[in-house]
Length: 455
Ligand code: AMP
Ligand code: GLY
Image 1 (spheres, helix red, strand yellow):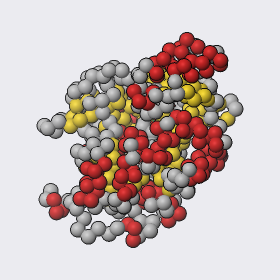
Image 2 (cartoon, rainbow, N blue to C red):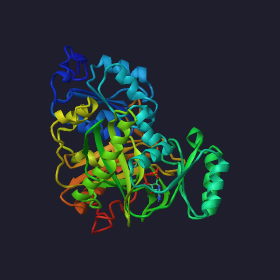
Image 3 (cartoon, rainbow, N blue to C red):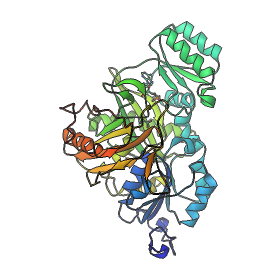
Image 4 (cartoon, helix red, strand yellow):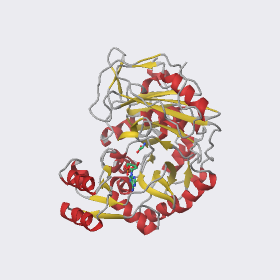
């Protein structure tokens, strides 16, 4: 296609959405390279008025999404991304992962006057520092596990000696989801403390938080914030463990479903009032204008919902699961959040029905993984079936190979969870690569038939 005919060519006279309150953006940049960012690109490109979505850097699947194109700029390259925004007349930037947010990418782009969905470095501390997040929760009166902060090995070991029971050990900083140990004994707690201060998590382990162990099902709640107001998405449940029956090592997430019946409408409203609104108010008291996602990881304990962690971004794979359930107002809503003007946006509708997501990983995940295996797929995407690549890479000859731990996610929707998971697993059976690893029991909490039918 000639560049001048392409929606990906620069807009000649950009009609800035700033002139049209409540209208959606036409040209969007999504920053990140995972399944989450492909799902965001897919959902945004479907919104009316959206002409083109760039995904930087994207992955092997990004260019196959209608309306999306990958852009070979690293997610940390603020100047490169800012230049691309000027060149392509970008009207909205959506930052997917936590690392660039914590490093100040949103602040950098806002300095150029860009509308950015994603908090600045100050707000991203909600995820980037467990101690900071715990202090904010204490100040805001948010229910969370009892905790003790320690900034040296001696201090942490002295606390353990005093408490003399197994605890959760969390490296303070970003550790790619690997900095948490839920210890089963005092010895295991001690070993986890030693590992943090031995530098296993690099700079993330300069200090830590010790926490009481809670128990109960976990649910992820996402609030889209414009700094003052919040729009909540349906609750989702992730599956963190690698093994069936929720066994084995923790991962980034092996599958998810939504809406999770763990929280009904009243339960979700309670989370808004008791967790998300007080968090936003506490952020404002610190002078932080938080425009992006507040992700509350909750544990539903016998004594009520408690916050396990906050993240400053969409969950992955919850995002892949949720995007197909969101209405065509999504782009306008994210832009309104980025402009601090959610009141002007149309209400975000959610579609009825259930969404099921199954992640396929590379052999060895979450440890050392195989890479470079050819991915083949005869899956035909539809309105009810999506394939989102994550750890994949397109080669010069156009073929696609595995390039990371979580390789892809298949997502399906239907009236009920049984049918949604059957459709997702049938879709997954159309995808192949050497060493493909996935759980067959995703959604066991909501399925009547635990074994998928893949015919
Ligand atoms: P995080 O990275 O903080 O989400 O922790 C990873 C996982 O560790 C969570 O999803 C929980 O399954 C578990 N976890 C974290 N904190 C606690 C806690 N206080 N009690 C029990 N399990 C926890
Ligand atoms: N799925 C969990 C996370 O994104 O942190």
